[in-house]
Length: 249
Image 1 (cartoon, rainbow, N blue to C red):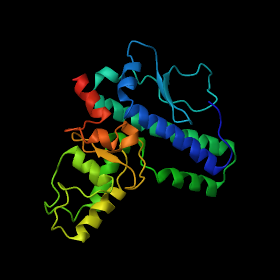
Image 2: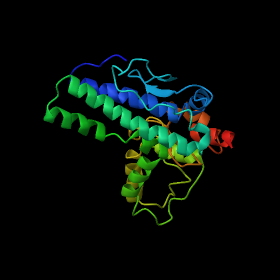
Image 3: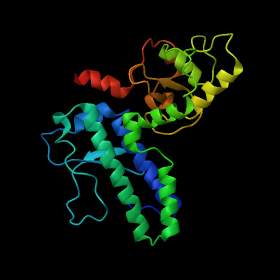
Image 4: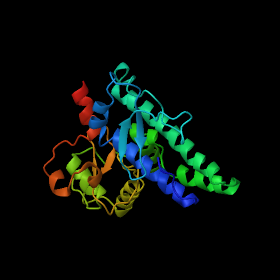
């Protein structure tokens, strides 16, 4: 693995790229990731690369390794538990690896207390991989933003209507004509805080979003390769994780 630059910002960019790669492996690319983690193979690791690509590979032979290594043997536990529990386990170990790697670079490049604190605060602003994979990050945002929005005026509807709302367009199913503007603004704020279940980022309501009808997590359309035109023809949208879980059963 190639070391990033020596500044806090460069190490943070390295962290973000690796994090995005692992989130992709555990969400949008989960079917491919599951297949590659064959329990019949030797100890395998999930590597997130700075260029947002991931790979499942054997650990380096060097002892001790040049850089901290991801957890070993993720493939051995694959068939011994529920898929969602296995993915959560890989996620939490991946979080630990990314923190270890970032602070390894910090120590190697001589960061002082202030630099280490700044690096940690920058990383801590993002939800963990575990929170993204399990949907905890979305639930935390929802609890803060919709405590007062339980009057029943907003009912569960098709993914097509909810995707329209997330894109900033008024939806007939979600926005009755006689509903006041205050509630409309509150709904927009709620989606403004929502985190994408694939990339873990929040780019506001100016992009197209779609909600999974099974796990109710929100996704950028571009992250799950769904366009607004395609969403218009989907009666019930299932995200890659939920689709994979159904196939596994």
